[in-house]
Length: 366
Image (cartoon, rainbow, N blue to C red; front, side):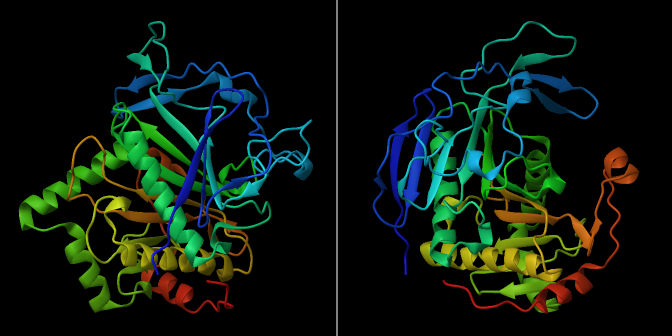
């Protein structure tokens, strides 16, 4: 069944935008809050790294952002006490997106003073995506319908940010666990929109376009059939989408979620393809939590094509990097990873995929 997305836009007291999304019409039963009525004076700056060929963001105002508050001061929960407003109102909705109060990039970043390196304004956008009103929940606790809604939300934000005319690339991601630097436990993710194509996406695009130019077809058009024919690294195959531990996995239980049909943006998925993608993504996250019997710390990134122009060769996919390589054993990025960009993995992907397939999952509401 096609899930219908409902949404409603609001403006916070400090001028930031808020959008509420739901599977049913939105109902707000309180004022639209903000932790402070005054906007943060954000003046992000970017400096060019001449040897790595990439931009570095500087945002001094972020030193004052919220850091691991007690549950009663959770800024991502709906406001319960008007005297202590949070970021979200009370009401009926499933997900919320608002402009980050402490952004690393803004669409209105002023021109900076000249610096010691090539310097320019930190132009872009930073948004927070709140996955649920349940402060103790997980992304994988969403129903299949809510996960489908999240995919629509990511697609909607990508389209909206591209429409500003200042954005060339959009990255949605989730950091989970204090091990990866999370400062708020409430289930949420972020969206960064850049006025350029970052180095990782630029490298992906170059490789994907070279593959397409050489063979006349997208990389995914070959990768998916090859993985299905081998079978050893597939975690779940849902026909229109699948999850795999890629044969070149850098992290021990690294998992990718892919559409079976090559597309470059979430908005290009059909409704049935999106529903399949949602089921597989939810399943992949649940398996990672079930692997060692606790919440797996991870970084999840949603890779879409740059939005400056059509890039049909770029492969839409989600990459999940789990930070435990064994129970209680973190995967730290050491000398070869940080210094050379060459990862060392303790386990072959085929073995990791088998372990993930064997995780026992209790039925959940769908």
